[in-house]
Image (cartoon, rainbow, N blue to C red; front, side, top):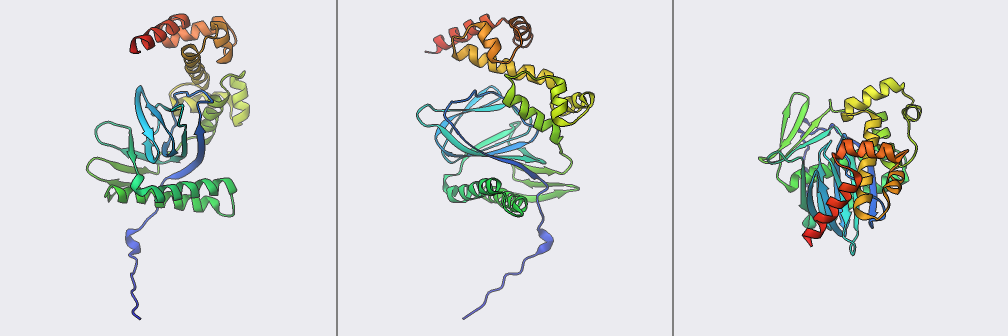
Length: 296
């Protein structure tokens, strides 16, 4: 019986300077508002089943089972399921990772049906580790993330380059950049997620400061630094997006739309809507429906 030994050249190995923030599992049956939003970190999506539309900025992209979506930080996006075939997906939020794609794109969508077993295994394993939180699960998740990224690189025949503290994994039209300097405030991320989940509640700056345990003046400065606007301005933007969805998809009165979107009064809603949309809520509803009828 022969023996084969394959020595590992440790000088050429290294870890990825990126950190897993969360793992999310969802089955979207259009049972909650699909609001356009952004994150200060990258997201990796794997569509387990179903089909639908993935909106990036103002452009719709059809997605289906075994599609893999990579989207950079601070890119507006949301998802919508096909009514007969709801999207089921797992999402990874990853800090310290940025991607360079062909042209000026900030995302990529590709089908990995041929690698279905690999990607499904790693995504499910990450989800299970996060759910069970057994001993050293953080280390297991980080290692799983690194292995999956290498699988992505192998799939596209990437090569490795190193430039000072930045590691580049590059092909001619698509590269990953891992930048240890790209860090986000944990408190600001948490508050942004809180606002997106509770926009229809009574939220004040004092409340956000209490939740984050930060001085409210520092909070405004830090939030603006990371997201380009104050927390209250962002809250207003989220409420306006929710109101536009209600105006387009329901027959609620303007007063009801204002209340369901979290505005304290119809007059304040009217003021904010005019500021962000350059038209009244009634005019927006009329314009949206006229455009929809023309497309039929």
